[in-house]
Image (cartoon, rainbow, N blue to C red):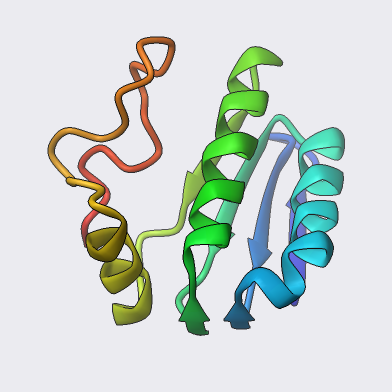
Length: 114
């Protein structure tokens, strides 16, 4: 895990690697929460993830919703590993539709299949 902060834009890139699964969900939640508390925008780089499960997708949805309520931005990096695409497909997340939460016009998943 690594992160970098651009103080001029209050933006942070948080690199999450390895297994992004239920076994590490507490650690991942803390890392994302800390990054969002210190920055207005957090970009999650998950390109080096080896495994992703439903708990990580749920964490991202909750963190995205929380960030939106605080006028902050949580984004996914441009490069998404096959395990993320597979986890989204297994969860039934459709890239053109995104989530069904009316609050999120900027759903984290909408148009995010790269």
